[in-house]
Amino acid sequence: MVEKYIKEKRRMELIGLEIPVISEDDNLGIEYLADLISSYPLRDKDIVVVAETLISKLEGNIIKKEDVKPTPLAHKLAEKLGKSPEVVQVILDQAKEIVKIGDGFIITETKHGFVCANSGVDESNLKDAIKPLPEDPDKSASLLREMIERKTGKRIGVIISDSMGRPFRRGSIGVAIGVSGVCALWDRKGEKDLFNKPLKSTEVAIGDELASAASILMGESNEGIPVVIIRNAPVPFTDGRGKDLIRSKEEDVFRD
Image (tube, rainbow, N blue to C red; front, side):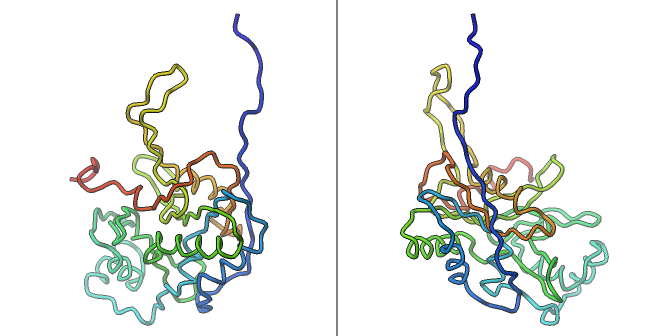
């Protein structure tokens, strides 16, 4: 006879943090954010998830529209995409390759290696300015982690997150574009399943899963929660990178 019971086995906590609104003109630097986060009572093995928009603003990675000089190609694409020529020019500047162009959308491979819409370029919540992705999200995550660990004495992980769409699925989810101090891609091959059989080909995009969980609190509108603490996450605290999650072009079955 099958035993009938239910019991709590594991718990993970997510804590959304509000911080002062930061303008694109402030240029406060990463240490400003490290000071804010360090003032919260962190614990060992907390994971700090930060929205990439905040990182770009703090690093001064914001482009004023008046400084952008659109090329003829940018003007031509702007009509097709329904975007301003300045925004399209920044999208092109941030792209390593154009993957696909359709009515109202452009999919590119960024210089980081991300395949996404509009090269990750955004102009929401900005005044006459355009925001590309952080130049080196892994480096930014590492710098932020080192600063927080030095200030608090706690061992933590840091994830820089962005929202991206997915092929054949509707809606956007949070993904990890920068990672430091915590596993990003968890290779579980060789571990045993519930029936004691070895796992043969199991890689878990744990960085993306954590970023996606945090994005529920961060939201996509006016929630005003750019930082989320994930506590008691059952993941390895190894030195992962956001780059670990990028599939090489040779492995990409969706591109010709």
